[in-house]
Length: 221
Image (tube, rainbow, N blue to C red; front, side, top):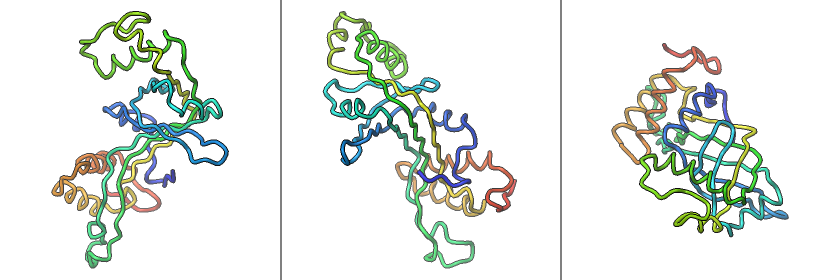
């Protein structure tokens, strides 16, 4: 993922806060075999400091790839939307001369995956997930050998990903003028598409923490 200076996360706290604001679904990507394309699996996950926890069906073929090569990537993408060219035209220019683009936020975790086959280890991953996704409870105990969940543990494998590198990108035209960003934000508000509110929120949030200059372009306070 190409990250320009102005698109980069300003701090680790920025991307962690973004993830922890309810973003718990992403795509696991593993290396292909003998020149094959990489394999991907969409799944829920938990971020615990420098570890990602998840589980998949026991017979998922992605485990064979991980046994061959434990280096994996995990991607989370949100707040994405298409920005028409006429929204980005320079002030006073012909709107049709504007160049369209995409806005989005993305975090890519890269690290080493370890497969968890011990029943208690798998049960602990599920306890963590239930505590996160269903904090109100209303479920049976997650215990090895205890119905209903215990006997089902043989049908899954746990996965621990020890994070080694994090790449975070918030692409919202941060290198453009405040006037352009304000115009785009208003267009997003008026259009009200599926992800427009999220993209608009990123413009506003990033503007509030913008440095005085980005790539030599002065920024208004």
